[in-house]
Length: 109
Image (cartoon, rainbow, N blue to C red):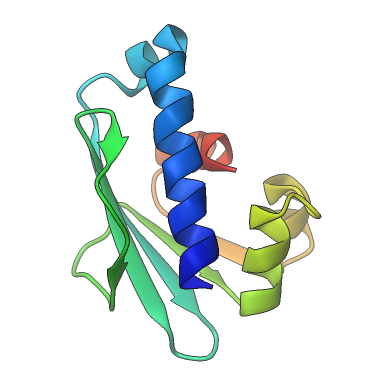
């Protein structure tokens, strides 16, 4: 799972680097995201300076966005077998954060 997430981060950073409109939208945002899997595994990362520096093991205090899901759903999202809105609507993923932050979440997938 960690390798899939690291690859997703790499693709996201490349997309940001190639897309001036996305860079402008991200601006000077600094957001920490916690991925909390139902098996107890946790990862987190921080978006800062229009870039995600890397994936860290474990939880983090006061994340801006928390993603609660299981490994299979997360894998399906990363591989684009399911979209983020469908996963959310069917209860396979739960998100905690501000409405604005949650709207940005879809750009990651």
